[in-house]
Image (cartoon, rainbow, N blue to C red; front, side, top):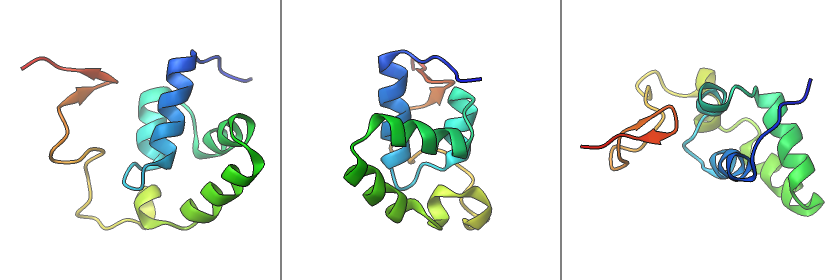
Amino acid sequence: MEKEFTERELDRIIEMAWEDRTPFEAIEFQFGVTESEVIKIMQKEMKPSSFKMWRKRVQGRATKHRKLSKSSMKKFKSSRQKQITHNKISKR
């Protein structure tokens, strides 16, 4: 079963997948898609050369895989980033 996403949601998933410090678990938490589904989305939405470059870049990268990262890295976001709750920026 393939999930339907808006263009904006797809753009955000792709953006998060490209970010070095955003683990796949964060994408799953916000959008409900697993790592393998993110890979399929990236393959479908990107040019073949861009997809290959992305796969080479993230394969085995500790910051993209929660279980490979340091135990001290528990946040999904940068300390300089505004507070985000389920993809909505909370007001201060």
